[in-house]
Length: 123
Image 1 (cartoon, rainbow, N blue to C red):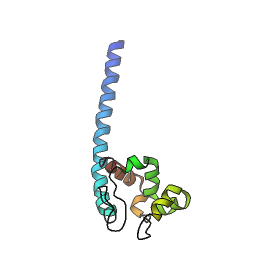
Image 2 (cartoon, one colour):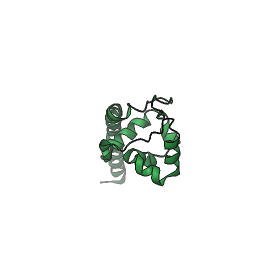
Image 3 (cartoon, rainbow, N blue to C red):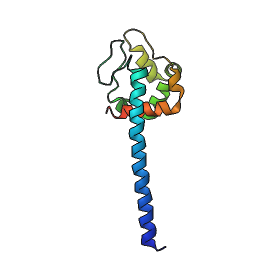
Image 4 (cartoon, rainbow, N blue to C red):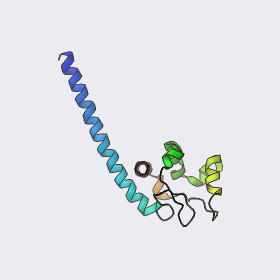
């Protein structure tokens, strides 16, 4: 195979990989929205407004916190409050003294990834 054919094949593989990863991301966000509605929307809304339980709105949340931090927060907020100053401040700022509970559904890594993919759509 000559160099130009090899290059064309590599570009084609790259484009296919990019196409399928974007489809996967869209599927993750769709699933994340379902998870959000089932588990998160009771306390959080997808706007920038505080909810009726004092939970912050999650619009632009990824501009306030990095993805790794949000992943840890979703996985175990009660643990993070004990070890992270920013998490403690968020917990203390709740006007009802509530801290987000650790949810069994959020122990699944894929569920957390999907919710984060959905949160990215709120930017």
